[in-house]
Amino acid sequence: MAGRTARLVLLAGAAALASGSQGDREPVYRDCLLRCEERNCSGGALKHFRSRQPIYMSLAGWTCQDDCKYECMWVTVGLYLQEGHKVPQFHGKWPFSRFLCFQEPASAVASFLNGLANLVMLCRYRTSVPASSPMYPTCVVFAWVSLNAWFWSTVFHTRDTDLTEKMDYFCASSVILHSVYLCCVRTVGLQHPAVASAFRALLLLLLTAHVSYLSLVRFDYGYNMAVNVATGLVNAAWWLAWCLRNQRLPHVHKCMAVVLLLQGLSLLELLDFPPLFWVLDAHAIWHISTIPVHVLFFSFLEDDSLYLLKESEAKVKLD
Image (tube, rainbow, N blue to C red):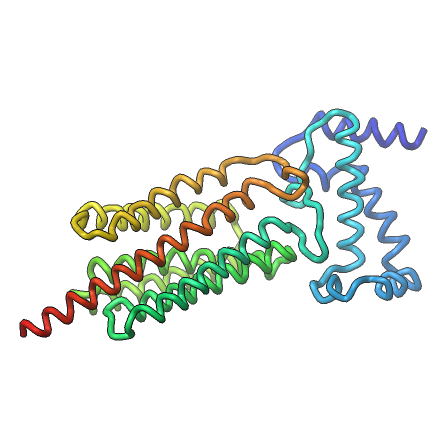
């Protein structure tokens, strides 16, 4: 009788399914969580939990309460599926099948591979492009900013906490802004260094204000996304305009392909579906799809830096 009552409560919740995290608002989930924490997360039971918890789980910061949330999430999902209802989200996320300490395995691996691709291309860039190339310092810094962002993306998808979420979001914003700065240096800054310096100061001020607002005032997801989308569109339009004006350069088609691919692939983020096999969701697919795009962009930066170096050497000879 108690089980049937629980199912009726669940059905009532499913009928009222609204936007947001319906799963963790379910009475079934909340009751399961309360009982699990009372049973496992205090006194001797907690000591027993800690003694049998794998070391990699404790190092990743998984607590007894987190394990209860994970177990009760799947209890609730099972009831939803049994009654023929759509899978709900929990705490703003789809349910993912945890692998070892990885909360979102596919996205974590994809983030790591993006970072690895950046690292490999950075090493290739530094090997093939002399430091005397005009764009060398800006490109190298951009690579390190990107590596930092992919590191925190990997950490966030491994273990979602308030800190790792903020670091993931803030570092992603820093990459977008640095790409805008990279474009500014390439299109204006080489001829007018003072303009590039002033623009860099402005971007740093904007990033500081953005991070300060989200950290100290209110962490507004809608505002954060709006800022990043707007900045990304400015970045794409600026690069694309430069590409169209410089089609005579043989390597420009790489940059144009990167801009168009990134805009097209970003549409994957609009898809919203429960993870395939409880592992692969739209966000993970998007991360996987960007790996070759980063390789292509660094290939463009390498070609363009060598072109600029040759051009600057030719001017020196003429002078």
